[in-house]
Length: 332
Ligand SMILES: C[S@@+](CC[C@H](N)C(=O)[O-])C[C@H]1O[C@@H](n2cnc3c(N)ncnc32)[C@H](O)[C@@H]1O
Image (tube, rainbow, N blue to C red; front, side):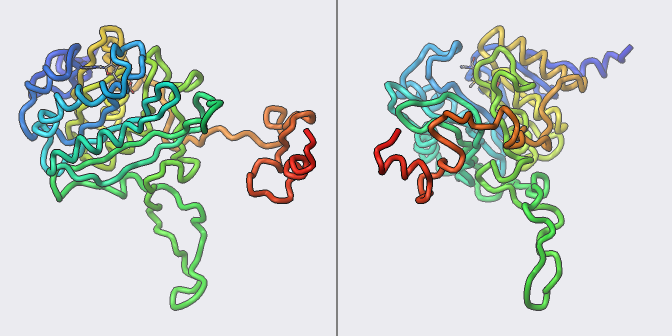
């Protein structure tokens, strides 16, 4: 049997106390934030409600998006240490096919607090989602990374990825023939699809991390941000915890976590998942696992013979394509 102190260490507390390692309060984050001492949090990583009519949202207009955040922002900045980070993971609001990029709104809001400096606008791309008929299908969201103050933590070595051509060598000069890449790997860049390893799939139906929550971000995305911006035992906060992704990523990297979730069902789910992660029992997609890419000669990837678009038609600038010839000749 586990000792009482160890059991407590592996439990998520539901009331905030300064000494807690893991806390997930059920209720409004505004209430929790007021209790957290100033300059005690190392990273705030969150995806706020987009106001797009999800099951947990009563607001559906783009104009409703900012007021809830503006209300808590002074407290978010207050609880953050100097050198700490706020990362806003947001997508798009769409009404009547009119698109509002939510990061533009967040940027304008953050500009009113000059102590917060924008360091990156990260493009997170993924392969699957809704298919649009009247505009290009959306396949990316963004993460806006702000730091509090000029000096801040960024541990690049913790998040480097393998070079595309690790065997590449200098081809002239004094270093001719010497390997040219950094043996520690390369910077993953601000477009997070830079290699198979970091092409991070969104959490859809068949994803191992999928729960009943309609809007989770993947654990791998949270892990990269946490590894780059915090040290072990640092405190990570997610005011809109949802299914607990930020908390799971934090505990998997030996960081502490505090969050709030207003919905009773998601709160229960998140507590359970974070505790499973603490016990090493939660299954999640490892960061290193490449996205499934079948061979182009399987039945799944073979273009049916009678389809109008064939493989060599797929580039708009392919002047020699048979499709263009057909279009010019008015054939179908
Ligand atoms: C976009 S989801 C977050 C999903 C999360 N990143 C994950 O991966 O599971 C936003 C969550 O915020 C919760 N929420 C909305 N308003 C809240 C508030 N005032 N305080 C705490 N949670 C809130 C919603 O119930 C919803 O689960």
